Length: 558
Image (cartoon, rainbow, N blue to C red; front, side, top):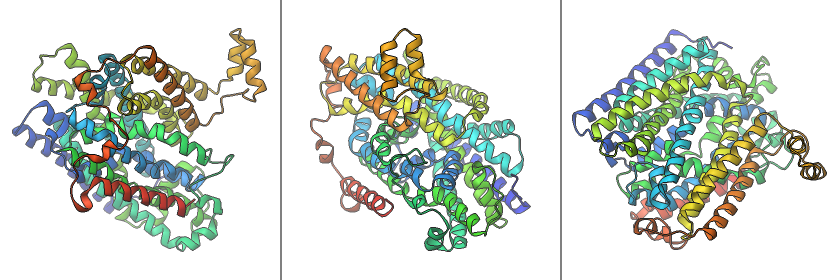
């Protein structure tokens, strides 16, 4: 559906685009006039403070996938998919307490670099390749495609030109300015994003008659976050409890695209408090991204909005067109662009950093910093082109949000395994980590193929001559197309990877170096003993307050 965009809305969007691209380029050029080191370009010179880190973490995480797909999920499944937002603060606490201190102390530029210091060079290479793959095909590809779908719905712009336009504009200031330009623009984009999302939520909430009006207009189960087994959302409470920590720790603690903001922190306390600040902001998405979709359903049920929404993917555009006056439509459209550009710029910068430090510098270790920056800019451009070509292929997914999380569920388990046990278990060995990454990634690929193509594994086993295994699967009720919930697949894969890690560790014990010994906690309580700011800035107090807040919200919306 096309939204009636007036001249005032167009003016707001143009001012936003010119302003944000101009700001990013100006910050980058200003940096080049000062320091021009590789650390300055890739890690903002280690100058980022906790507010910038927190805002940038949130902005990079929130993309058009969230604005569009969470509204869609809210319309179809109610608040169930809000779990992906409210479980995130718990993993941000894990980042703040257990991982951020080691990242700052080891002075790494990338997370693969951290794996080399803890394990071996082979682990670094494998994670670098996986991280580049996930940044291009998950973060950038899905974001560009979803943004293009929205722009097509709002302005009638064809899909591919939309993808190219947004990629070029975002790539321009990312190539020029590096991480400094990325985080500065992300901070502005977070404000624009929140402002636009709050506008549409407030208008819709008022029209539905507040919470009581919404409760009368929709099925009561849609107001619950925790769902029972067999619920139509395919997201029962136990899959969230068991599966989300696996994908969440990878995403928030071990994914270069996200964690790069923490690597650029001014010091350890800023690296700890920034993620906690982001955790508090993550309370909002359920109310400003998921809830609007549910309110839209309530408004249609009440007859306030016409029953003309034929495709749930158009929920957000439908609300913009029917609820907002001129000017506010432009602000919300700018918010959609902000979400898209912040995610894409962050991912492009992380790809450049990974390739430059983890792959190219290995081939030419003597390369000068300014030449490394040039390589980073070339790689940013190449990643942008690759994502542009890949994005249109995502039309094959029925639900973009569920599609991206399913892919994460198959990528994350081996990486989460080697990071978690690497910092908690002193005996964890380099060979165990390497083999776990290899085998776990292969298993994840197999499960992805079974799920994507809905393959009947019992038939595959029978055709492979494993009749006994095929009969066992049929007897256990596991015959037919693959039907394991993707969150449970993540949990099962993590358990398998953990067993492999332990077995390989006992078979090939680890020979620690002085460096690797410093990257393992001696006890689970040791992360709480580091130096902290006084008062409300104390990361221990903030972590406890954030955990209590999230538990209270789950109790209220259970």
